[in-house]
Length: 395
Image 1 (cartoon, one colour):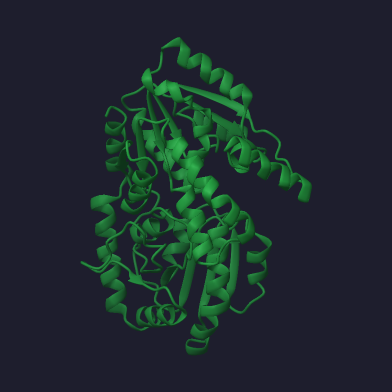
Image 2: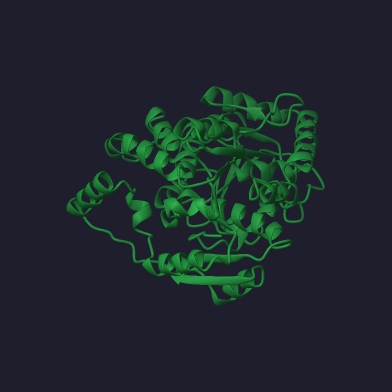
């Protein structure tokens, strides 16, 4: 299993949550060697704890990130154009990890390689799938994500992304051809992957929730308290909270003067930190227990305008019993209409009306809370999804 993003603790976010929880199931019946990289924020205690979950933990230093001005950026783009690998992938490439992996595959002692997230696919040799099962666990399509950012005007650099878009299509098509099985989180992404690589076997395995970490709330707190949960250094989340805080929250506060918004997530960017100066907004940074903040909220908002795949933040709020108001992107992969498990909103007016309904209707809050928890228990527990992932490795 290759995951250059150190997948522990799972509270760190998306890649870590999915990788760690699927790993926990695989180790029940398989010998697992995990290859990952260590960043400065990874502690010795975290290394020891992750190591206790696997047969063997191979830890490699993360390459130093290259920064610079326009000439450096131009150089990285030129390499992307000529070599076909995006700069954010090539910058993390470790020759030491590659050498170890090459020797491991040649030894013949492994039956399956999983690339946990597409950034790890750089280490997979195209000819390996003739001798070993190669699985890519793709969190979302790179091409589809870039295309969405341009369409929704949420790209932080539209000029760059317009240049990147055809290159990402070429890169992702070639990347997928190296694998015997492609795992995605939603039907929408499955469709995109089949377009990019029609001959691949594609399996849909959504994200899930650990119900022990996200227990159902004991009571409805009422009030007018909103919460957003997610890594606050991630562009899609930064865009979401800035949009909501500046465009939606003031209208709600005009209706309900005591409306608050708590932004819960690690590494808040400067744009997010600046929001804390606005009325009723609190930025927490990383917290020990996310569920505590969910249980204190009247409504969990997921106002994403870009980013694909099923969202952990949505599933976790539902598991905790907090009514959710989310966008099409925030609710992707979920059937929420029958029974009603969340309210959908994509415009400012829709957010205001949906949240106002929940503020004023305790019965509706209870309905969403109960239905959403049932949906998670029946379909989105990691125990259930881990079994499906295990089965996909032998297809």
